[in-house]
Length: 255
Image (cartoon, rainbow, N blue to C red):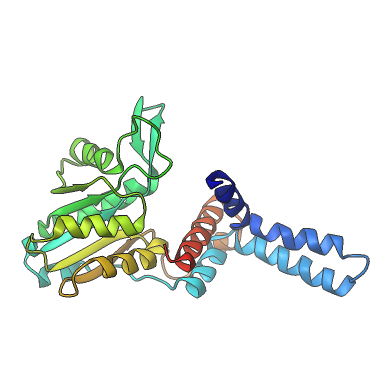
């Protein structure tokens, strides 16, 4: 049932989510020409929005809101030992052939790299949060363990805390909050992708004590303005639109 649910959700995400409109328009083309034409137009518009960077950003602004880049100068507002940089995992792979070993997925690496950069700006401690996930295979290492190895080997950095029990965003928040309890932390700088940030902030605000300040530090932001190529279908546009659809569904479902 879980595989069926994920398969159905994957089909409904952009840009393939526009296909039912096109199919319905084709089916109604003989009996309801105007309605069919409208469905075709909506379907093609949906395909464009779900295939381009500009379309994905336009949709994100309306469904989840646009995130702003974190102002690094704010790291000096609170003493470094009282600020925790919390990085959320985005998945790992059981085997990456070129490395002959398990590795973090690209989104996880992007988050970790930014989290380490922030931590070095203020000499703040870093917490990496990421367990096995609900579809983990036997023997698969946790995201936190993979991040710890990557941080030490590639960045020469040692995270202070490794939260390796969580399977979703709410558990990221709950277990991370438990690890930070009684550590003298007054501020949490939360690192995740811009489209995931709204869900993550909701979960962490519910899990953290009200006296701890929570500040978003998103990665994956689009620069202001756009270029002509942003109007054209691209692999990056499709990936961004599908990720947006996934995050919007998660937000609406309360996850």
